[in-house]
Length: 340
Image 1: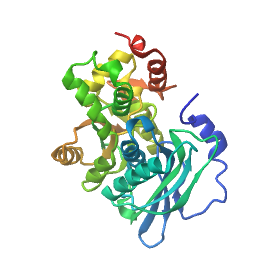
Image 2: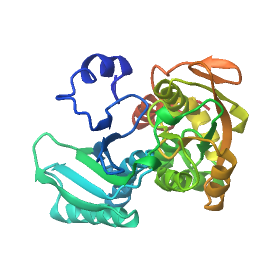
Image 3: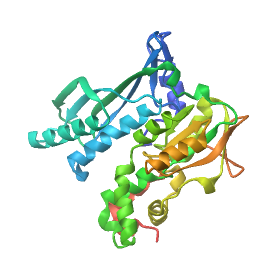
Image 4: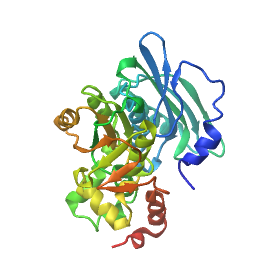
C-alpha cells in the first residue's frame, strides 16, 4: 500500500527499535503525535519534526516550495511551539537545472522567512534514481516553554474538540490544481476558484499558532486518512473517548462538490490544512480563529472510555485513503474517471 506505513508495522518494527533510550526524550515517536520532544531540563523543551521534501514541479517550483515548508511547519505547530530552525537534505534529480534549483531554493527561503525559520544545516546533491516529488528530507525544530507544550497526556474528560476549515482540504486542492481542465467544465466558476485557492489553505501553522495563544491541550493535523483518522489517533494517543457531531464540522462548498465528483469520502481523505484542537476553551479558540479569517467550529467533546463516536456511531481507523486512488485514476483516465 502506498503512503504512510500502518500502525501495526510501526508498533512491530519501528517503535521497539529506536536505538538507545534516553530519559530526556519525553515524547518519542508514536501514532497520533506529530512531533518528538526533548526536555532541556531548564523549563524549556526542544520540539522536532521530519518529513520528505515534497516538490510537485507541475505547480511551479516556488508554489511547490511553499507547500513543502508548510507541511512541516504545520506538524511542528501541533506542539503549540513555533518552528525556528530547519535542516534540509536535498537529493536532486539530475534533470534539475541550476535555474530551477535557484527558483525552488528561493521559494523555500521566502516561505521559511514568512514563519520565522532559519536553515542551520543540511546537504545538497544530484543523484541518479531521484525524481519528483520526493527530493530528500526536511527537519524543523522549535524551542519553547515546557508548560506551553501541547500533548495528548494533558487531555481531560470534558475538554472540547475544535476542527478548522473542514475535511479534505488537501484532497480538493491537489485534485483541482493538478487537473484543472478535468474540473473546469464541471464546477461553477466561483466553486472552481474556491477549489483552486484552497491550495493556500493547505497549512495549519497559523491555526495552531492562534489556538496556542488561547488555550490548547493537544493538536493534530488531518493528513492521510483524513479527519476521521486524525480523531482516532488523538483518541488512542490520549487514552480518552471523543464524541463528535458531524453537523458542526465546517464543510466548504468546493470540498463537497469536488469529492462528490470523484466519488470519495471527504472525511477519510487527506486533509493537510485541517487542524484538530482539543482545548478547555473551545469558544475562545474558535472566536480567535474566525477573527483571523479561519473557519472553525466546536464539533464535540472528550469523554470517558476510548474510541471515536460520530453522531452516536463508533468509527474506526480508515483502512485506506481514497484520495490516492482517485488521483491516479484521473491522471490516467481524465474526465472519464469522474463519477457524475
